[in-house]
Image 1 (tube, rainbow, N blue to C red):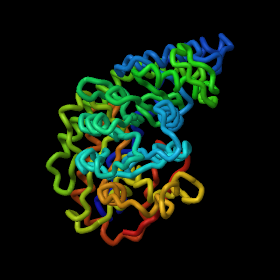
Image 2 (cartoon, rainbow, N blue to C red; image 1 turned 180 degrees about the horizontal axis):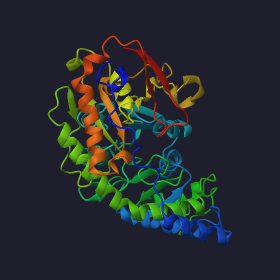
Image 3 (tube, rainbow, N blue to C red; image 1 turned 90 degrees about the vertical axis):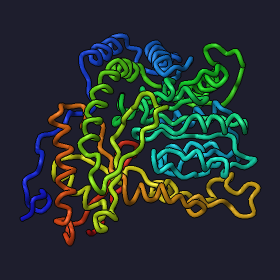
Image 4 (spheres, helix red, strand yellow; image 1 turned 60 degrees about the vertical axis):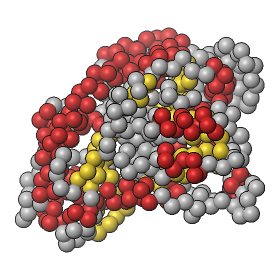
Length: 438
């Protein structure tokens, strides 16, 4: 019998961590108000509570206009359409992200171009963007990942120099700031998700923010079945779809936004304390903090496990051990989209991949992003944000579990049990399970 719970020892923790999602009387009162009104849906558009929330959310992030929509993936599609992305246009995206960042590009018959991530932040590496630009490039889509922002200074500089649109995927970044500007407000358009695991949630839902009136009007029309926008100064007419959010979701989100700052304060204090306890532990490393990121939105706490320091014991073994100690965690949270089983793309199904090319572009085989692959399959450890909403004692348990596994890691060598890495349900519709022996 070993010291680790997975080898028969006593686990660090048996008590559940803080439950998520969090809610209270404000959500209950809002729902009751909408129920009594009998006006539950997204039409008339923009509906009362949906529009009030959208504008409040936009102002909170420093943008002029907001549209509340049905989910985060749709928010990206709307933003691309609002920005004027046409069939055949190319959009720069990080390889290490959720497949839903890339799917909307294909749905508009445009072409995603994968670029590797910065090993210090796990976000789009701005130093690699210009080498990936072509005459067809029309937009850059940075993804602010987990705890960090992409380098918005350099991305916006490149975009301005090449007359490109910047669309920020802010699904992890509610309330975060870059140079005191809210997430989504440094670029041209910001996209948010309100799915169940996010920092604020209505179960599903999404948001688009911008300070560009023309983009705002296009986003409204596309969301509302092609109808004219509320302001209609640019008189755009397009085929649109019903991508509206309901009033029931809107009142929940209004309450969630009100509680976000206090939750962020608690989460940040506990994460800082956790990092302090682990810093200096051999074989572990941390993402770097950029001082230009003036407020952290920590969707998950991410640190690096360096298997070479531990004699090649794979991350999957460590994750299994941590889970047995009572700490929820993920490793294969994301993977390079071009390698994902949730990205079963056939070039012949997407006409733009062959336009103007001698051979159709195969998105599964045409890219190799080594930093993304190492993060996905070897080193990243993701801890869910809600476990940092408790007490200092809760945080000590998380740190104690990690340190215990590192101190007794030789107990994992030679175990015959399968390690199971589950692709997080945070942004997925179904789990991806990989069984590995260690």
